[in-house]
Each structure stands twice: as structure tokens, then as C-alpha cells.
Length: 429
Ligand SMILES: Cc1cc2nc3c(=O)[nH]c(=O)nc-3n(C[C@H](O)[C@H](O)[C@H](O)COP(=O)(O)OP(=O)(O)OC[C@H]3O[C@@H](n4cnc5c(N)ncnc54)[C@H](O)[C@@H]3O)c2cc1C
Image (cartoon, rainbow, N blue to C red; front, side):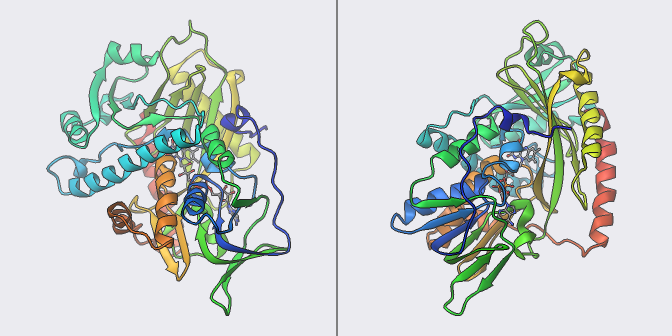
């Protein structure tokens, strides 16, 4: 089965860069060339124009989750019941939303500064449901979102059907005011192309360990080469344990998605849209500007990556979700099916840490890393360079990913929780 990501397939490839060879010296080393690492490298290059910045990726840069995600630029999350205005969790939700809004602005600024053409649509998205009971406390949600700077409107029945071009969804909150959609592979390619000449990128280089040298520098090693750097930023997200950082309290999740052929105007005349579920394991769905439908309706905690056969089963699951929205679609209408890994934490908050002197790391994007990764990359580079700001302090304060029980207890707990969430999301896949 072809597992090419649909976004990557529709984005011009950049020439491959050489792998790391020998032992190289750098002032700054960034490990991981996704959104977070690339934004960190941009900021380092701007702050230290004379410095040599090296960035390394184990595959081709900008081909991981950063290119494979659903492209939601999240300024406002769907509030949980205890986060509603007047409830105990509202204060935390307010701080998190302020961070997310800053993150979404950061994406806009990056797109403008680097002239990135990534089908950016600054027109909000929907929190929509098939089963109207899954959208409870609607008035309180509207009030909460509006109190935090969002434009939020409830749409139901025909009003919603005509917006989305499908009668599947019964109710939804349209949420604008910073929320946007983009084509992720084009966005991350734009970040990559815009890297200044002082940043050297090495691809297809798997960093497997970090060690402190006698002179205080850090040596990052691959099977056959190494970089010795004064400062290291680890931007590996779901793969953070690969360089020996095991205490991030984050865990990987494997997601899968499919993208259809373009629908005809007769099949769906709606403007492009994006729908997020109100349930953690519900489907994320988009109608793209060229009228393809993207669905992501699996998210799994797994011990090993999906095999081809297992991905085929996930594709059938995508098809079922597609047919609930557009009943005439068949498997032949699915043009691409792919997987990607994100990094999750128990609390929903990131690991954003100074690990040791001159060693910093980020993980735990929890599914909002397009905007947050863009911001965190900059903030981490600023922190490591000795700068501070109220926003950075706020991110550091909120970065409490929570405690994870040891394995195999955690594995069992996570699998059980996933089952429960899957049942709760049954009407929303
Ligand atoms: C299917 C899917 C849908 C998603 N939808 C959304 C969405 O709509 N909106 C949103 O905000 N977020 C979404 N996310 C999450 C989002 O994609 C991530 O939060 C974001 O891409 C994180 O970026 P990153 O740079 O931190 O990590 P990554 O993009 O994962 O980059 C890490 C890089 O490190 C490299 N690497 C790994 N190991 C090593 C090593 N040992 N040595 C060197 N390099 C290494 C990898 O190759 C990779 O390029 C989604 C994720 C998935 C998988």
C-alpha cells in the first residue's frame, strides 16, 4: 500500500541535503527539523548572526508530523466542562488560550515574513457534532470562547448543512478570531526554504545520543558522525527518547489520515472548512480549497508502528467516516492514506525544559503543534540565548505535563483509556 502523505505529494520537493559526516563543530545544534526545530533555527540565526547553527533530521527535513498533520492553526481549543467561564478550570484555560492566540499570530507573522504560500485561510473552523448531545453547555461555551477573544456562533440544521455541504453534522460552533487552516507540508517547506545561509541542515542523520564533554560542550552522535556544540535544542517531539531524554512525561501517539480526490462542485459546493470534534477521539475533517476531503479519525497509543495491513484497516475506518458525510464516496475515491506521530502528555501541557546547562528540549504538542511549535521554537531559542519575556515565563509556568506511571502500568492504563474514549466518540468518527 502506498503510504505517501497527501499534503507532501501535493508539495514540490526540495533538493535533498547531505547527511552529517565526520565530527563537526557548531555554536548551536538543533535536533529535529519539524516546525519547532525550524522555528528555533530561524530565531537562533536572527539572534546570533555570526554563529554557526546546525540542524539535523533523521529523515528528509519537514517530512514528519509537521507535514502530515491536519493543518489546524489553533488559537482556541474546545473548552472542557470545568474550563467554562466561572468554573475552577477557567483561569488555566484563559492562560492557555492567551498562549495559543500568541502562537497563532506567530504563524501569521512567519507566513508573512518568509512569504510562504501554504493555502492559509484565516477564517476559523467548527467544533461540530453528529450527535447533538455531544455539544453540551452551548451557551456557556459560546460565552467562554467570546470572553477569550473568539468570534463564536452556534449553527444547527440547514444553516450548518449549507455551510459544510453535508447533512452529517447536526450542530456546531463556528469559532473565528485567530483560528485558521493551512496546508501543512507547504507551510513547513516554506520554513525550510527560508532558512538563512548561517544555518546548515543535515538530513538522514539519526542522532542516538548526547554526552557532555570535558570542555562543557555537548557531543551529539549518530552511527558514524558527530556534532560538538556549545548549545543544543532538542525538538524531537514524539521521538524525544531517541536521544536518551526519557523523563519528559510525554508519550507518542500514532494517527492516520486519508485525503480523497477533489469533489465536483455538484457533489459539494461549500467553501473550504475544517471541523474539530468535541471528543478527543472524534474525527478531524476538512474540505480543502481544491475540494478534497481529509479525514483523520484514528489516534492510537501503540508499542510499534502500524504495518501496511494495519494501515489498510485504518483506511477502511476513514472510508466509513467519509461515507457518513458523503455517502457516494468509495475506496477508489481515496487518493492518499498516511500516518504520523504526535507527542501527548497526561495534562495536555507540554514538556518545555532546560534539561541541563545549555541543553533544552520540547515535547508534548498534544495535537496543536502547528501554532504552538511555531511559537515554542522561537521561545526556546530565546530562553537558551538568555532572553526573557512575560510570554516565555507563562509558557514555562504552564509546562507541567503531569506524572506518568511506569510501564507496563502506563501501557495498560493508556490502552484502557483509549478504548473508553473510542466508545464515547463512536457517533463522531
Ligand atoms: C495526523 C496528525 C494530525 C495532526 N493535526 C494537527 C493539527 O491540525 N493542528 C496542529 O496544530 N497539530 C496537529 N498535529 C500535531 C502536529 O503535527 C505536531 O504537533 C507538530 O508537527 C510538531 O512539530 P515538531 O517540529 O515539534 O515535531 P515533528 O514534526 O515530529 O518533528 C520532529 C523531527 O525530528 C526528527 N527526528 C526524529 N528522531 C530523530 C533523531 N533521532 N535524530 C534526528 N532527527 C530526528 C523527525 O524526523 C522529525 O522531522 C497533528 C499530528 C498528526 C500526526
